[in-house]
Length: 422
Image (cartoon, rainbow, N blue to C red):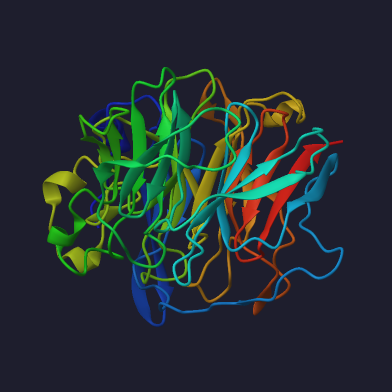
């Protein structure tokens, strides 16, 4: 394997968000044959990447048994975890409107509820007193957004907006589909997220790939594995960034105009390939999928295709572990949590299926300083795992509320958890 000069790599990326260093190649013996292990420098640390297929691809899906009485996830000392809402039907994503109403997208790969529920905490005690169906008969909704006098919903097949005013508890007006999107996808790549820029003049849409690694051909991947940018009326679509296999969570690093996303990487290359990641997103940037991973490491299944794109593939900022299904993302832009958490990123890890020992099934925290990642991911909300074969639930979306607390969507646990500082 050729040695890659990461100084050149960072110059190609055209960004200051990567720490440049030398890549080292290590020869290790496994099963009587030499394999190549590489060390890649990221913004916060180096990560060791084994050779593809160093371990066999394994399917391991623990049963989700749900939470027993008085059981709940565990947060670090100084935090309190409470049940915000339960008995929901796959509550995958949450959005807080400017007036404080909380909207929950209840949707799934199969037998999807296809609705959005509104929760309202009238007396501000951390427990919503009002719970009603806001809109139903949707098509696998995820992203939600209030912008001016509209409520936007990202269904798997497009973006629809509805007339809305603050305090509405039900959508009654007719929707306008402002953008068609390619529907369906490998595993959970049906989800579409929404994020506005600071002045509301642009909306960003995450669209995951239709496949694991383009096994159905690149014609099926048009407008996919991308973050798209549109005007609020759906016009002016362009690809903001590409080569992102399944970018779901998106947020702006506090104090900057830099977009970040959490990306769920590819399967079937072995236990330790490929790490999911958190990364800054450069306009026009290419992040490797499907031709390469974690920068310029060629995926052997692509048989040397896309060499020009591989040459400019950007190394992600923060590795989050392989097969963790890192999906949710929210920066902590409030001041109720201890100072170490200010401006840092929380990532919801839905949990592995393609690994011999399970990984993920937790929320991790990535510290930031001066708008950039400054340390390794650390466990924040844990306790979802009972054993290698059983889990209580699966965290996905994370939402920082205006009151400084944080909600964590546990879709298969049918619960939304609230984390607050003592």
